[in-house]
Length: 297
Image (tube, rainbow, N blue to C red; front, side):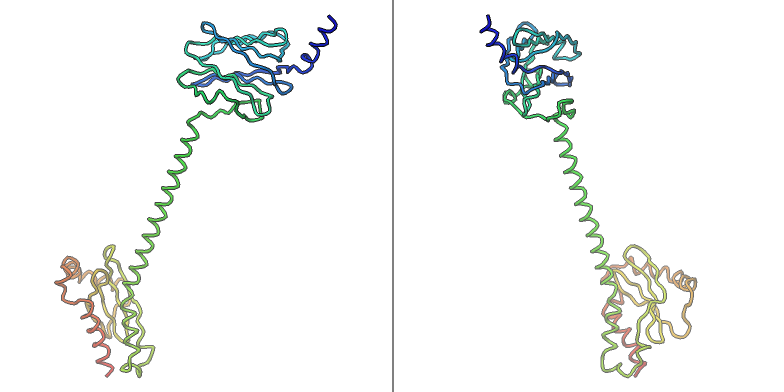
């Protein structure tokens, strides 16, 4: 008898004591999380009965019998009973329920999972690592991570498309501004010729007196060059509408009055095909140049 007690003493010293157990109900499973005071290194044995699964944890102890009713489609009730040198857990389950047991990485915790056989993966029967925080299990569902991944990818794609659209709009605006600046570049080139070197610089500068947009692509601009002003239609076609000398519009109201008088003329220019416009770009530039340089001579 003395020798038998000596043999059982190491078992009682190294047995892991169950400190707590928690049950987590999910739509596709029910998990029972058991925590020990020391790393559990015992053997887990399982036997199946009709609508119940008996699990024996050898080398584990608990102070008293525990009974817990569970409102789950997979687990109905749980009974934990202390036996000699082991603890027996009896789980009353539904039909077609699969049981999976796995330890945490530090062996201080043991998870008992009850799920449908069709949903169970045989690979999950191997030991897996869990979070060392045993007070709670992860609350996210299995599909939430992939759903979040697709949302992040969709947001990135939308952001890239938005940046490309903004870049294209800015490029179009810059190109339009370059196209509209042809008159200033051409005038500056004319001024630099030998024929106009004697003219004062103050009379050879081009400035905008008034400007008004007609639509998204066309504008009417009044330009001052020397002692004269030119009313120009700029956009898809660049057309000289009228030349002013001496009496010039000095207010926006006078400029708008001139545009109202030429409303029909502007509409005719805008509706006419490009090949039918009488004053193409090159003809206008030659005419504007001859008007200025002819008088200087």
